[in-house]
Length: 311
Ligand SMILES: [Zn+2]
Ligand SMILES: [Zn+2]
View: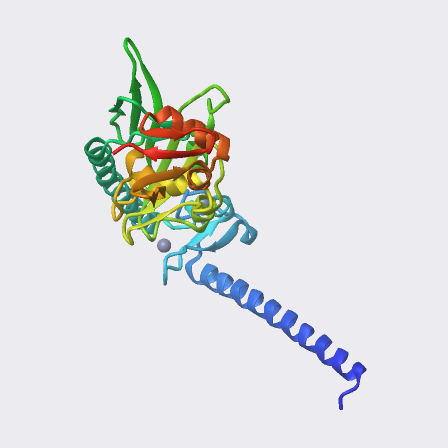
């Protein structure tokens, strides 16, 4: 049986070996750089054209596979500039192609969102049923697309729900911040913010955010148009309820549908219990009873917090 000292020695020697290996690798990379330098007598950075006077001013090799052009330390410090002039063009083309893909996917989704909202008529928000719901496309431009559900009044209209569709780019955090602006206590509008991307372009950071996002008046969705998966925080009752409007594979649910889904048949009548409705909608029993009362679609069984669905 190995004693403790032997074990510790072994760990120490393993550590030392690893350290030596890393040093060796670094030395090899350095030597490789020197070899390229001596062979090619490089004096100018192939990226920015700067004259290089010292070996220390070279930071690395062009990231394109097999390219041996060196990149100066100034260029290297900006990650997108770690390519020589020639390969930078390829890199940019690839980036542009990705941006074009995302744009096309987003345009497709915008069309889908408008068609669906208008055809099936979204008629509820976090405060309940929207009487005389009117659906309108507020902004149609790529990157600004906005659909709004209004409640029509005699002389005015009140915005109740908005659906924002955005391409998923690096700037998604700023888009979220701007959606969160003006979401104060008095504002009655509920916001659904949908980011569009393809499987390759949706990063872990955006996915994590979508799966953890929590706000009383804003839901966040990340739609993968390639796999067809809509990502969101399913623990949030309203995000979960709205998802059927935003997921092309699901059937949208109107307020009347919501009532039917939670109702129970009792003695030939359909009964909606405020408690059960509240659980589905992320509301307390009292708030839920209020929503059900105001909808005008049910008859209240006085003093019971249960409601009879009008046939
Ligand atoms: Zn340079
Ligand atoms: Zn290159």
